[in-house]
Length: 84
Image (cartoon, rainbow, N blue to C red):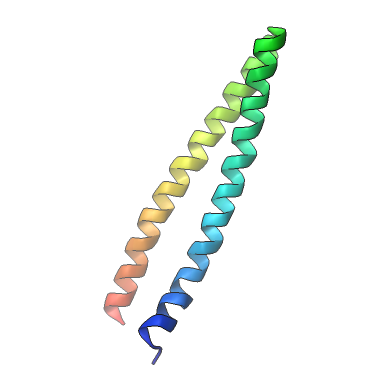
C-alpha cells in the first residue's frame, strides 16, 4: 500500500502534465490572437480581424476544456481515493 504522500504524487502527475499542456495551448492561441488584432489596428485588414477572432474562439474553447477537465479530473481522483 502506498503512503498518502506517494499516492498524491502518483495521482497528480498526469494532472501536472495536463496543466502544462493547457498553458501551452492557451499561450499558443492567445499570442497569435493579439498579434493579428494589432495587425488589424495598424493595417485595417479584415483578414487580420477574422484570424484574431478565430484564434480568440479557439482560446475560449481551450480555456473551457481545461477548466472542465481540471474540475472533473479532481472529482474522479477524489472518488478513486475514497474507494481505495
